[in-house]
Image (cartoon, rainbow, N blue to C red; front, side, top):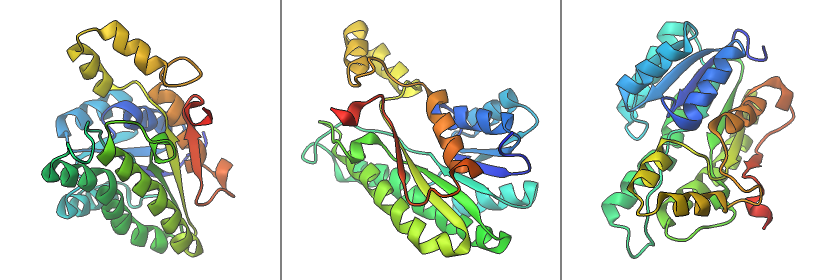
Length: 250
């Protein structure tokens, strides 16, 4: 029970890593607020997790929605002790193949969303006497992959922003760190495999990205996020915790 009496706001919390993190945090004693632009999915996730979970519909790329979502969380729980900036998505394409609108939309969620949520929550944490922020980056910030230029750039930005935030706010007792997952099985890959001409071949390709020989599971990343969010990592500031099955060791 490492998060007893803590309140955690988790963006992109309705599925994948976000949902696994919300479930684990609740089991560790936290009250969790699941924020997701899919409000119905967020509500369902909250019902599945139980009494410790509530939901807010929130698109992290829109400042007004972030303000409203954070205000709703504070109205329900009185404070926010932990912010997990997890909302994000991927898109195929090199810089030549990526349309400007697609680039802007991805950056607005993956990178601007971290900025908007942090900008809104940090003053609350400062008034409370401190807090913890964990941003979801990616192993691709260190080892780029082909055909994902916008995604790789956005996650590189998240890693750099995490370090800048860590230095700017440690004097307010706000610890900021970043988790860098490898390829993690999620509903995104369910859709990709379903649309693939040869799902088995694609599964082998995905599993082969890491020396461990398989994709990661959302719950494995959730446990790493729990470490960064809890007092177990009290001396960890401005760090990037890579959980990629060995991919960046190649």
